[in-house]
Length: 132
Image (tube, rainbow, N blue to C red):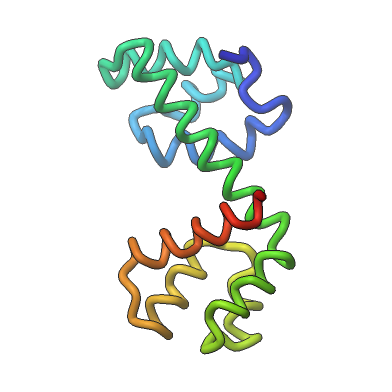
């Protein structure tokens, strides 16, 4: 696994790490400074994870973070697909989303009565389509 988790993106990712693993303090995360080996050790110590489980959990969170960033950065492209698929969403709704998946999920629940899971799956389907 890469020693430098995000090559300069640690500060952005650190908040997500703290949300996921609330037992890690700001001091703990300041020690990490993007070094995955240190983070793995802290997860082992604070959560009793095996090394492999900690590495997988970090990779999973990293992938989620990367997908989130991609969605935000390419929002204008996604927005077109979203408009095609869900025409009940107004321009005002889409402006409120601004690439935030959570807000889009809420809008789909509100306008289409979708469950959170169904909305997330539908959004992920669009993401996958856009990757191709």
